[in-house]
Length: 313
Image (tube, rainbow, N blue to C red; front, side):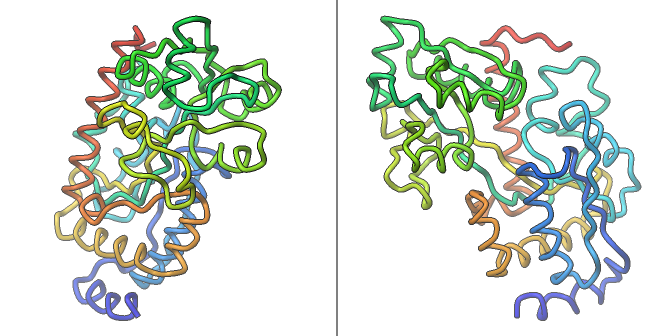
């Protein structure tokens, strides 16, 4: 019903009149790719033209992002972006070929997956407060998906904000650390809720807190970091849609309307929710709201990289 009402508006303005290309700057199968494929189906219905997903992986998302930056600013080539190419790579990659805040125009945010602090079941800490206390008496080896990753930066921020002393242990990707966490050779990890929740429910790991403003609808029993005493602490892996910076404002607006209509479709919303993605707020769905979010994330990542002593290389 939403799409049927929206499509004539898009066509009356002459845009779009051919297929959209959604560039995913990562390999198939990950969270961003899955989200892009769900959203592409909604955009196809909302805008009346095909929305084709193309994977352009490499350099932590920078290759695909730069491809969109260099594309014609006509609204037909869009970036499905997350933390890496937008608000992490500027602080870990030397000579990044684009400026994410200057060279890309936010269309709207799709949603986010909150970061969570997870421990191995045998660790004698059942709350975040207990973990903080324990970290001051013994080393707590805490894995992330790598130096300069979004979860590494979240861990650095958490140590600074909470007074915890969680020792960083970088892995080559988030999947590599899970067997060590389950097996007890790794004490803790900072990861995404969607990754940890099935293991938590199976009793193989224990989630102590979620870094979100409120408890997750899919895990209402898990307290937030804020409830656990870390003031205003939130962190997530987000997904959003962006266009080349010089894309006309009316084209950007039409894309934003199409995205919003797509996210309102029960089929799209349901699949995103099932994948573990939390809904973006009404404000975050807008171009201005998503831009504000990205600027704040950029500053948080910059501060965290400085805390961690990370130098671009």
